[in-house]
Image (cartoon, rainbow over all chains, first blue to last red; front, side, top):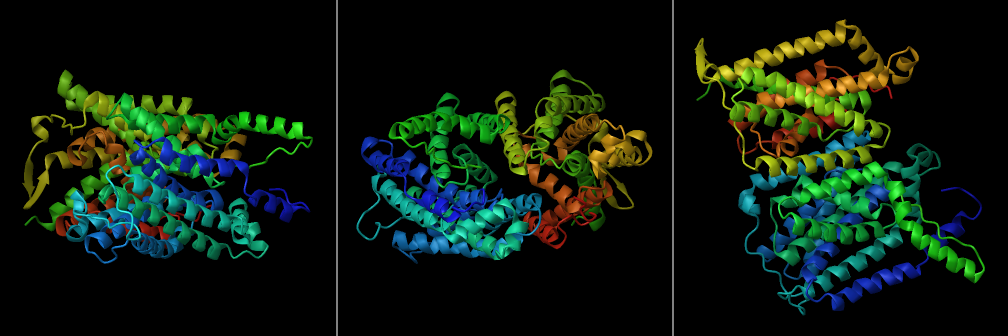
Length: 343
Length: 289
């Protein structure tokens, strides 16, 4: 970002709600009616999108690389499962918040470990924490059900009104609503002065500290928030599938999540959501080709993305829409090309 | 009840094996600052090459071991020249994504070709069973591992300390720019080291098939162990990872024996504590970059 006189104005302009965004959410809502037989995969896209959004908050906005984001997802998932099994909090929305808070506590506690040290030790510590939790869940199998996972999760109707149906319609609408609310919240946060200070930290922590940004406190705050989001995503997973097993903590989940975010592009919030849609469609396609070996193609996609270069890929994807927008803008008489830095 | 010395012995064998498996990674991470999560894939290649040669073609075990080394090293150098080389100057996130992709591909490709079940290598008679020394049960196979890995470790240490290549390598570690200014062909040193490290991993995979188990998920299962060795040992010396491997091996064997339920929990906790306490590794020097 160049620092010129119109910084405040530029920030405001970027924060303005665009037509593209309206279109995005209209399509999302339209999906309820257009794909009535695809609710299960749509639901997956919704919670995966939320999960990727939570990673975007730390990776795209604060530059924290995590190989173990599944830790928070897993805590949220188990929390929601346990709350339902033992009937502690019956109402799903309330249980969702409680599960999110549980993940948030863990996020806050571990943030002190993560923000220290180089990128390599960040990777190792996040990975270690996720593996550690997996071992814990395995060890306390009388609580978590061990390898078999939690048994007998029954989720009550949402708000006491809408029972989860077999086709997953309620589940999808529920996930979409949660996603939309949390997305709007994240949008408010990243365009606030707090969010801008995060970007400053990502670009150069030393300079950010020099202009008076409390770097560590900001990083702890966003890491904790991100854990909350991931916890909610995990809880949504458990509530819509009635499953919570050890693989919620698995390394593959964290790795897939990175891929989701990379497909969509980090640092503009929609990346996670778009990535989730593309990833699920790809995964569906690959597993219909080679049912057991879809992971091979996922790996190939990762390798190709890196070899092509993430920047170059995004530019390639944006080339056509930008051309169209520029034409429209030129036709209107002012050449204001939209500028979006996706890094 | 198994005596403490036997646990110690098994732990040392396990630790030495871990060292041979991961010292290649210590070099890639320390020398090139390259986060190579696919390191275990090279070990897996070595393991499967050895298994196929011994089980299907009837090649003697001790002939198959060097072949495993050569094949893994060859794959390593091809990968280095075609792919890894392009990524040395990219950020860690790209390297992580790339190598995770490679792991996924390697895992599923091996699963497709060899099947997902665990593979055992038929060992020669002379390596099976135990014998007693002063009342301590000594497994023949583990003894062989200690001997081979011990010799390798000595060889690596001597190479690094005494040969011309060793001095070039150390120069390239400390300051690649100054090293290339002195006429050292740094990319060539990188490539050779990478190949050698991959070869060692392959040899370790072949040797370890008996102890660690060999299946397509090997690279994912042991990734964390290799990373622990390197991060705890520090990536700037070879003694650091060596001591860290021994520590990890003994701790893992003893942990599994005395507190089987806690399992890997102790090890992960230790790793995180050590990383927080000394971010450059237990035996690492203060980072210069």
